Amino acid sequence: MNGAGLEISDKPRYATVLSQRFELSVTNDATELPRLTEWLTDIARRLGLPRDIAFRLDLCLHEAVSNVMNHGKRAEEPYPIEVHLLSESDSLTLEIEDDGIPFDPSSVTEIPPPSSLAEAKVGGWGIPLIRRFADRCHYDRRGSRNHLVLLFRRAPESEAPPNGAPPPADR
Amino acid sequence: MNDGTMKINLLGRLDIVGTNAIDLRFTSLTATSKAKVIVDLSGVDFLASMGVRLLLSNAKALGLRGRKMVICKPDPMVRKVPEATGTDAIIPLYDDVDSAHQALKPP
Image (cartoon, rainbow over all chains, first blue to last red; front, side):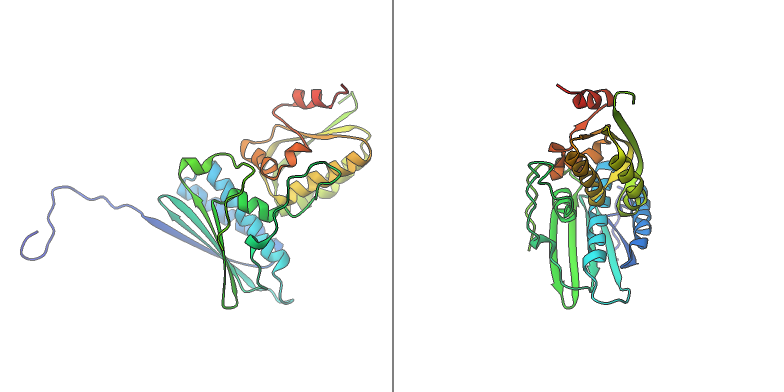
């Protein structure tokens, strides 16, 4: 360091992208789902995401947004669902926000694995899939808005096949 | 197949949009089938809860008529979806058509 406060080093410091943030707004209509898929597919390609984590993001985003579309209606009028994706060196974080009726996915009762075809429930697998394919699931009601945060670790250990035990959902 | 087994090949994404697009055709094929059914998922690169629902509802309908459904050749990530929900215990998954076929043969 010289007297003028200029840092001088003979070692070059190359620029590194520490994080990237992406945003999309869709309305609560199933015809918006292909646009959501295209948005995420494009990001996965730009970030060079491995198929494992790209699939898990795709699945959890699809289930979370379609859940809002199916159950979050508060009026006949369309309303926006805001999606944010934060990419960092060790993780990816999806945030899904809407101002529909309050709904906490972590409060949904777990479905036991079906014991027989005759007794199996055909539906209700969306929230269990989010719990199993995201590494963390956190819900907040902020004012009049639902705020769901799903975290996916880039570390190899998080990319092991999901087993029967879902990760604990944060409240 | 000439032994009383029907193989149905699915293609694309089994999300809400993709599942809705094939629901009627798939259900009419399995509902009118007097055969056991092998569902080939090798062309499916995405499976969401709506796709699981379609497979389960048709497997149940077949089961009521004493017929079986099995799945073959799922993509490695697609395979994790029925495994994660435990539905692979009631609609078995096989890595190839021959294994699926063998599993449907009477003991």
